[in-house]
Image (cartoon, rainbow, N blue to C red):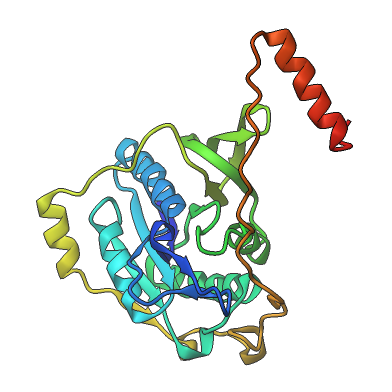
Length: 266
């Protein structure tokens, strides 16, 4: 079994602040973390590896050189090898250009590592929240895709996936190869051991640049990105609410009705 997991290094949204003048993210001094949904994807891949001896997990990330820190963190909890897709030419890419670049990177990595049976992605990155890259990779590669997975396992020549829906869960099966995007499962990612962290720190991460990939210049980076963000802004602060607390429940209901009626809400 050969598995690829897509990893993205993102700013820790718990520490993010917005510039009130420009309405842009203040990234200076904000720590970077592994995108949580990608960490969940890696954990599900690692659980498949636990049950299928001989499975290899390869990691790929597209970003600046500092993203090697995220890859090494993931090598310590299940990854066997890692590739960084990094080039100034890739800068400013939207989801379409990103997925196109990653598709070509995957093709290149498969020449070195062999064909991938499964490609895992987090359902979305917490800095962009588009949830588009995983499905777009599947479309570029003409692979079946299953989204919002919370569990996955191999049964014969198929992958069985438990996925979250708006009404609960469903079990789907797919032939391999397949792209799977992962949402938050009921379990947490495993912790690294001291031994695995030391091995990850010594690991050599291969960097793939634009020259290494058969990409078209007008389909990568900012030039290949048709998506334009017209405006970003912080939502207005909510005003204080009104607490209705009369002597009885009946009186509270009557008072609430009066308030809603006065505001032309009902």
